[in-house]
Length: 322
Image (cartoon, rainbow, N blue to C red; front, side, top):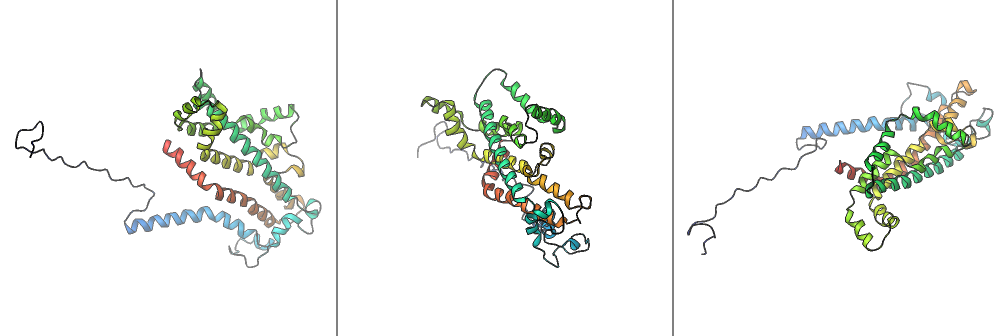
């Protein structure tokens, strides 16, 4: 047997102890192998699930109650009398009331207004923010970090501070009283989405862009063929966030919209609360408003259902980078 080089004849190589392998860390939110720990974990998970779902279940129950059962605080969560006519009256109107409510509630029109305004707001802010984020991630120019810090600094300003100046700008260009202020500002991007997309673009290997440049691609082609497909999860997250923000926004419609035909769903439901209440001449048919609220939540559920894969992937990717 040949002796090992560097060792005296007849000697053997020392046996090195195996390198200890670090055990994978267990997340503190995962159930342990202890049966008691599993029981506590599932009890906490079930309890928090009930807490988060109870408001929606209560709204769903209230939307199929009569007016008397709605104001009965001792009533059960499951109605004793199912009154599905509330979902019809949110479109046709509540009988016995004058004005708009008798002739029919334009709920369907408000729904369409919210839908296309949400698409415009989400689509424009996704594209514009992606363009700005790609510029900050790819190009190197003087004062790049200073400009990016200024963009992030705008996130520190509360919306109440800029509300009056922004209104004066729209008033000066004669856009107050229209639906343009609800989405046109998204053409210039959003600081939060620019930051989110820039972090995602920075994770794309720069060699891909350099290879594309050697093949003759221009910057627009690299943005369209490389950056956008690889950043699809982040783009979907941006679209979902902004669509949800536009769908549930009440402040801007209260400021800029003053005609019934222009109302979005939050503005229209706010109008119905005042009209159906005693101060507006109604009898307190808030169960009809609850039916409208339940219908208004369905698009958000459907949107998250179809985009949850990209949503989870985008959030997980950003979490790994952080």
